[in-house]
Amino acid sequence: MKKEVVIIGGGPAGLAAAIEAKSHGCEVLVIDENRKAGGQLFKQLHKFFGSKAHSAGVRGIDIGKQLLKDTEESGVEVWLNSAVIGIFSDKRVAVLRDGVTEVVEAEKLLICTGGAENPLRFPGWTLPGVMGAGAAQTMVNVNRVLPGKRVLMVGSGNVGVIVAYQLLQAGADVVGIVEGMPKIGAYGVHAAKLKRAGVPFFLGHTIAEAQGTDKVERAVIARFENGKILKGTEMAVDVDVICVAVGLRPLSELAQMAGVHHEFIPELGGWMPMHDENMETSVDGIYVAGDTAGVEEASTAMDEGRLAGAAAAEALGHLAPEMAVERKKEINERLLSLRQGPFGERRMSAKERVLEKGARK
Image (cartoon, rainbow, N blue to C red; front, side, top):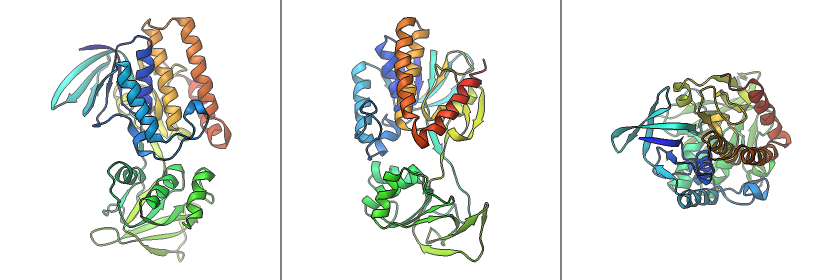
């Protein structure tokens, strides 16, 4: 089976790329391992920030619904419950679908597999009840199941603080937010909601141990300085859930399998596939977008997907060069606006380094 554009991952970046490429006349196939496309958007009940162009004031779940609607109306082919299990050097993709392995040959391949939560090891971390914040968010927002009654959140970044508030809204008692740094990592607007609700922030603290027999029964937290726990500062808190939110990393194993050049960019989550201004990697015809290309935000992921989709359409001859220049300029201006301010500037600087180094073909 041959397709012009094959996109692995039906999250924000993948769907935006599919809609973009299809709008220019490309034949597009999206492959996603889940039973529903949309990725993380369907877990995000909070309203987005930014400009009207970036859906400011709209909840993530509603953005996801619109993306699915646009995908369907554009005529993009989508395979759900389909796992990519291999990528060969000639852009052939092995897909496990309905228990059968199929091989799809792509002229242009876009890898938009998103990011994964970083683990945090500590005594008792394998007890039932210790979970990633994203897992808790899926349980409460997608499956409508409360993971526990008393929750301790480890990590005060946007993910940790947003999920803690959503757990609070769902009826859990959030006993505290533990943060190793001396200041809160999340946007002030998110942290303020928890402060107003009376949730304490334990800054300069870390999780020392999870205790329990067959499941989490209590958490021990302690002061944390210079990378070490200060003995004598331990404090036990009765909980049945410990959520860990200590950052994300790019899910780029498939890009590695395809032979794409990677480098370690800590501001963007760690090891990631290097790419050029068109989101094309060191392997001709293979593109990356979204958290796979460096962890940022859903709005950024969608615009990176659009950029990759437009570039693929241009390379296939569906988008005239002069029109491609204008379209990519428009998208890059949107990306620039998302990478402003104290949080965005750090990501912008990292992305500039990525582009300076290039894909190294």
